[in-house]
Length: 277
Image 1 (cartoon, rainbow, N blue to C red):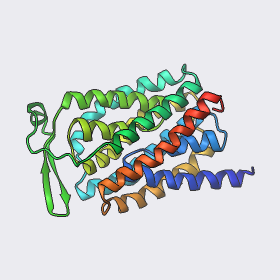
Image 2 (cartoon, rainbow, N blue to C red; image 1 turned 60 degrees about the horizontal axis):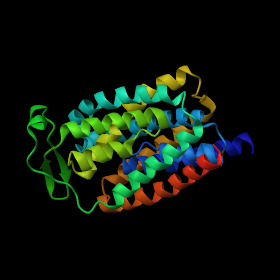
Image 3 (tube, one colour; image 1 turned 90 degrees about the vertical axis):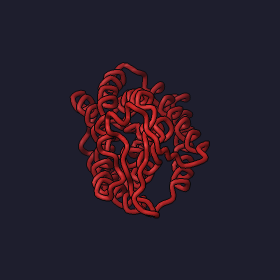
């Protein structure tokens, strides 16, 4: 394969990753890592380093639009970043000693868990009354809907904060931005509307990824020749996804999210077991 072909495949794959990441609240790493490791044969540590950089690009490309539209809960995101940033640093340190096959299998299992959770969800969460702790932290907010600006409450702050710590560890270990777990923490545990969860996840992912990307950079796992086409592609895809999300149906997004990552998950698990990664 020539360098030009290699670069074009990375760029087109990154465009798809950015679009998916922006629509689902993921960071794009769920597409970037399988593409680089399974399709292009890149070492998984370099793939994770590249994915973390792409997560930063995705967050930068889409978060601004969501904040402008008033969907993102910035106060909630900044509060939960305390947990995800600490976890991301721990995960990045753990990644240096973990076997690559273990990382690949854990990556696949993480995605399957996220997909099953998305498929089993039956209705949109919307609570009016918030917990006492959520009120003290001023986490409840409003967001624009088809019927006008709608207020929503927040529950289970401690549970959501704990889940965010797990999300941070997985981000640093797997380079996925752990948007799936962030969405689970906010949507399922804290009972926040799905669109608010995905957009706030996008807002948070850049900060989480930066914390662990610094460690990968220090260890030489961020290669500019790989990162450059990936970042440009992801950024373009994320900007397109941000425009689509404002008019999209949350139920359709869940189905889209689930089917995409199930296929990628089984692929990563298989290659981790047979030692292709």
